[in-house]
Image (cartoon, rainbow, N blue to C red; front, side, top):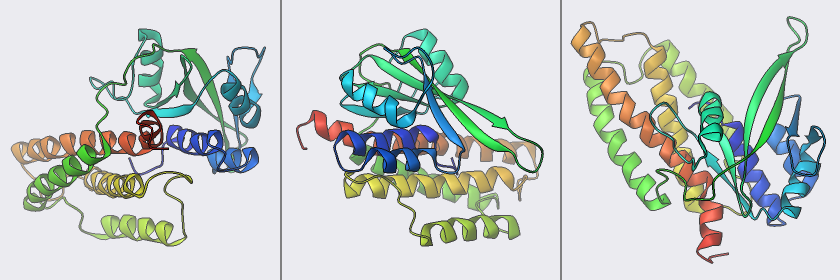
Length: 262
């Protein structure tokens, strides 16, 4: 939850490109981020892997009007619509992009290459057929914002009581790192997204930070088995809600298009 999902970058900047708000080169650069290179394999009409710029152009030619994000977890096919083969690969990767306007989806496969001390990351997006159906369990932005605020209040009360909400040097370092990243002017979403989507995604990322700190902080003050179990029970629904909010934010661009807002 701390790191921005690659599917989020692909969907956000791909949507901005499809809407004519950014150039192909700028979109590709933003999608790759700190990785070395991204390629797309299995695109209809292409015999082998192609670069992002060509791939996004090909998707547009195939009728793709927008890109949605899926962030599935075991027992929670968030953002997916089938078929089972695509869902299984997306679940293994814990993320995927689903095209709007063409029955296609993209699942990332991440490789590390290079000698020790100089390792770089390469990503291959596998293009697969998907079922054209509403994505599973994706809330509206308004619903996501309300659910996230409520879940955060409930979880904070429990975690504070168990002394695992975020105290000590590890938590402080994580919070400082988040603030430093935000202050560098990082764009949370690509151009064209509604302000509410940016707000929801920022809140979901902050909640993800707290969850990561709580999990990474050992047992904190939760010294008994029952208290450790209570912490896990408190975190699980908040993590689920934060993932739902992330997906709602990334998918807001397409949802507005479907409603005729843009």
